[in-house]
Image (cartoon, rainbow, N blue to C red; front, side, top):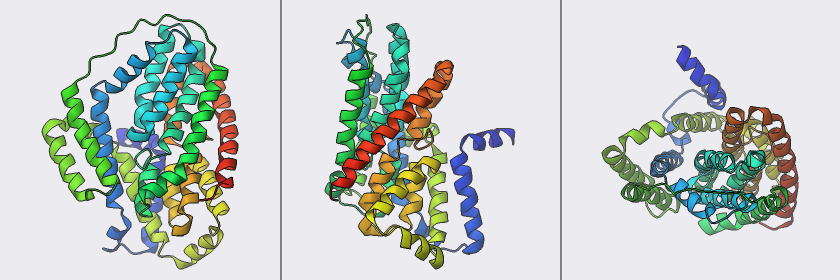
Length: 373
């Protein structure tokens, strides 16, 4: 019981989602209609992506790519910039949290190895923002993107047209800030790229491709599930231990809660009356993300947001990934590394991250809202 309580304490969002789901079940009687609430496609794609990324992580491919790129440089400015941009681009395909789990420890190792630890904080902050802004571009880059892409049945080209301004602005902002804030200090970097298990990488690449084909609606999600389970159980049973089942249960709880809310006409009418313009939907996604993080914000607000306003909601929750430390899972991941490895830098990290986030949010939001859908 102690272990269970400790586990639940670490995943407060799941606990809150579960409690709200249970409360809503007293208002809307459980029935077979509950199955219609659950977006199985989202859960299948997320399960497949988590399994594939966990496998790719084990092959040391991320470390290999990062090492091959940074060993060409002899300045912490360019090493830091390369790490930040690798994080930005990998986040488009492999989800932001998975990339950060690999590249943040790599950053800490590199800065300690080159005796440039005092620049670790700014590099990690820009990595976090880069991961969020890069992953904002594609449906598979973030859990909220996977969900909204499926929920509104968004055409792929339309999705990119809406998110590309966010990623382009994010690219220039993090790159420019890195060039300004990281000095051109020379340093020695004697590294050897790790060996990659190319056979395993190819196998996990098939599972990853399987997920991407489902995201692009080329293959049905149930086919994706069958292929994932067969390949996973035969070649990577241990990877199932690496899947974040709590996140899947969090989504399921929110599906039940928001599904029950959708049956309460007075709530739908009152909130829907507020979320009736592009601006109101955009800022609702942005602000709500600051308090409950952008994934549950996307699930909750989509219940009351008309299909015509999906672009505003998509943009709001993706820009809302910046801001408070709980606005996205990526922010929490990097903050945990700071707490563990640089506890004395916590205050500076929070202040700098918050300041840059506010500046970036204002700039990107202004540009996005000035553009048409």
